[in-house]
Image (cartoon, rainbow, N blue to C red; front, side, top):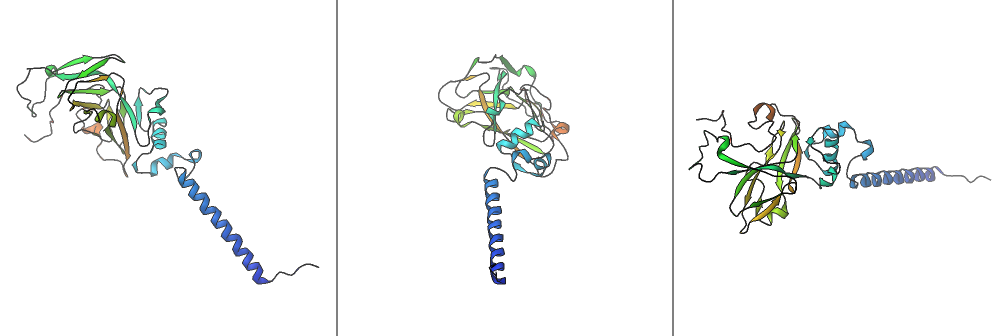
Length: 242
């Protein structure tokens, strides 16, 4: 004989099944979130990249570069090894500029500098460059960076360099949306001893921040150093009040 099941038992059974299904769904969501995103990498689309704002994590830096939303040139074959949790290493370029001794008694910030105000030191990959205590120099990275109108780049120093007293930027750490060029390093040695830097070494780290909306005026239209592929001497701001 078939065993009769009461209505109460049926209701309890259905309720239990729903609770189990709900628990499985919640567990799957927790696992998905802990794996680093709201969806797996295979199902991420262009729309996922467009919707997010804030500092980009490692996997998104890689995707933005692969999709050429952020453009970096040259890009080594093993470039992903330069990507950390929220940043990417850039490398010291081949040309460094130093102030010529005794050339100017002072620098007029309204007039800018002539090209011969700084001497040029050209290096090849692996060549050493000695930074004396108290010295200041400007250089560029080997990489040329191009940003879209909704991303800010920030040049950060590396802690290994900071522990030696080496600065890689004095004040200009922000690269505005629309930037196109080789980022400039403002090198200084605050330490008590001369420090040897090498052309091609990892010298700084870049972080990238996605804006909620694109800017109205990009650096392409307003920047004094747009398109520069090496460190350029100081240029006076033509729009500044005299």
